[in-house]
Image 1: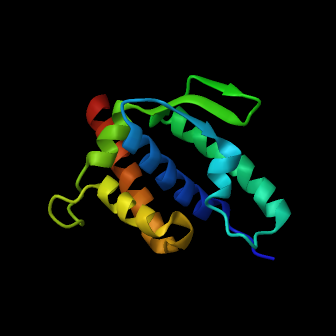
Image 2: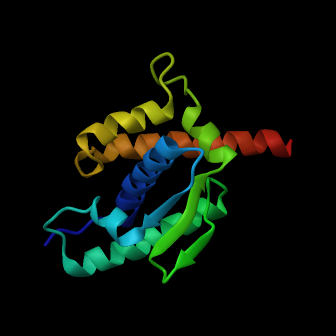
Length: 147
């Protein structure tokens, strides 16, 4: 049976969520955590690991909210997250163009490229690098605000 490490699932979940929220911005969305997470998991996943990944998805939303990337209006039955929207920090981080990317290619452009083929098929290193760039931008911007 197949198992997926939490950080790998977090990366795919985060990029998929940001892709979804960016496309709908400035409107907020309702996210059914079960449906959203299942779309990212392979069909031959171990049942216990699938249940564990639902908890990772919940923790991912909590983390992204706590770190200021998203807002969530309310949660129903620990399953449906209502009023989910990118914050200014999340939106700005997605629009940032790192020096390592081609000219005029934002982080959201890279996420959109992955979305075309599906997040399940995305390479581990590709998703890891994009998430690292995204969080690096956020950390750098928070240091400017604090200074």
